[in-house]
Length: 223
Image (cartoon, rainbow, N blue to C red):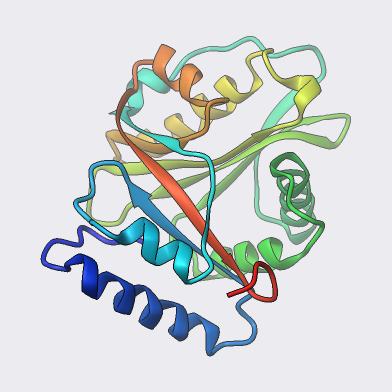
């Protein structure tokens, strides 16, 4: 769930809005979790209380980063044996999503892979990039060009712990930035964890605000 703003919705009405949104997704039994992204610059009194009251659990705050795509382009030396490539085949997508689930601490599931494969079938501009060692994915991320704007999103960055700090995520980000520039995009946007924020800051992106994901899971936390 995302939106431009919540201006005009007071603390008393915000609970109704959250309830209506959740009811919409709850009506589809195939949907097992919903994420609502709040932002530090929102004027939304009562939103935290309304989300928690409807069973949403807040995650760690992330940094909203903006900057020029050209600042992300760099020739980054990779460790021996590491290669980068764009992927779209089903086997690669499933391997990428399994790695991301592992890194993010999510239980094994093919739901993300199925959703990503559906997105790829839409041919809406999303790109998937991975770094591999001997055919094993050690880092991955998405590029999300935003239609009718100069923006492209840098999303889903995940690196296996033993491969962090070796320039792999930076190189993968540079590859995505080059691809976005070739498609006529100029600006980058990322919601970054504390693993990726320092890397993007060193490349020239600027933290402009924060965002906190709130997650609801079906049959998870009592509602």
